[in-house]
Image (cartoon, rainbow, N blue to C red):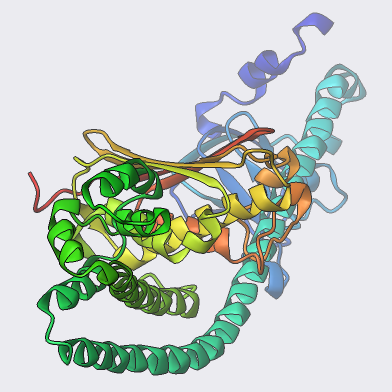
Amino acid sequence: MQEEINFHWIKERFFSDEHKKLNLAAGETLLEFNQKNDKLFLVTKGKFQGYLKAVELENYPVFEATKDKFIGVYSYFAEGNLSYSRVMAMEDSEVYYYDKPLYDHTNEELVTLAPFLISVVTNELVSRQHFAKKMAMEKHHDVQRLLKAEKMATLGQMAAGLAHELNNSIGVLDGSLDRLQLFIKSCIGECNDSHLQSFFELGLSKGQVTSSEDARAKRKEYEQKIKGLSSSQARHLAKTGIDPEVLQGIIQKKPDVADKIYDLWETGCTLYDMQVAARHSTHVVRSVKQLGVTEHEWSNDVNVNDTVDEALIIVKNLTKRVNTSVELDPALPHTEACHGQLVQVWINLIKNAVESLIHSETSDPKLHILSSASASTIEVRISDNGPGIPKKIIKRIFEPSFTTKVGGLSFGLGLGLSIVQRIITEHDGQIDLSSEPGHTEFIVKLPLINSNHG
């Protein structure tokens, strides 16, 4: 007989009477606070939760019972048989009950049922313990989310004040830049030399589009086609990207004009870079000011390569210190995005990579930037051959205000990578990171939303 005393035997014998079955709809109450209860319930379908009477806890569940779990254990065994909680069905549910009071059992019955009754009580204790742990974890996560929200709200208030001051400064610089541009144009115009004017306009409209690598490769071509150029003059003119045959006739007529051509072109480039930096500063300030806001200026015709080029212009003083190679897919399709925000993403990632290389004094420091596209995704990879990021830091590296200098890494105020992740999330993209000594790579994937370019 002892071998037959198991859950299935108990369920069949004591919890299968159709006359002792209750069906409860979601929201119905099985037991009330302090209700006298001399029944033991077995859940056969659905889910129940128990709630305490205390006002501050009446909506806070203290236990949960699903299929093959018992309800009413405490009140069935306790003296007075009073329920300590309200038990409600959380969905359409079904229970069977055993209603022979504990004190009506004979000694022989109690001895026979003792292993089962002990098992019920023990399982109930374990179940309550697991549920308490689950609720404690949920409460902990709620508290952490609340703290994070308060932290971000405080950060947002600070950022708003900072953004106001920066906006004033940027406004002055932007206005002064326009006046300076008009003044330089006026001065050049007084020379009555259309060629000089065009060289300035070229730098002003496009900036430096010739890479340092291409300029070095074409330097000999300038020396060969334009006789009398010094080595430094050829090196400078190669940066302009102007066809040496165009310059040949001008310089041969006026040999001393070579330096002036480069100076005017470089002045135009400088103003162009300042315009890009001022424009980007406005995006940065807006992004910091709106840490918790997702409304930004979007376009359905953004060229991701252009955003990378702008970022490289802004950080070129940094990238000069490392061997930088750029492979941007010229056939990259346009997509829907926020141009200024993407520039900010690349600036942060490039800046962190270069600073890591510099601070760690990496031998032959290299930075590589690559863009590519698939049928549904645009991908930008930014990698370096620096010291790598320790594994214990990788999981926290995108947290707001997480700052570290471990392994040569320095993330300033800790806002950079947090903002990067937020921007990528707003674009429905993802950012992945892989790192080991000698190779760290951030991979940004953006959805290809191609409305204008089929």
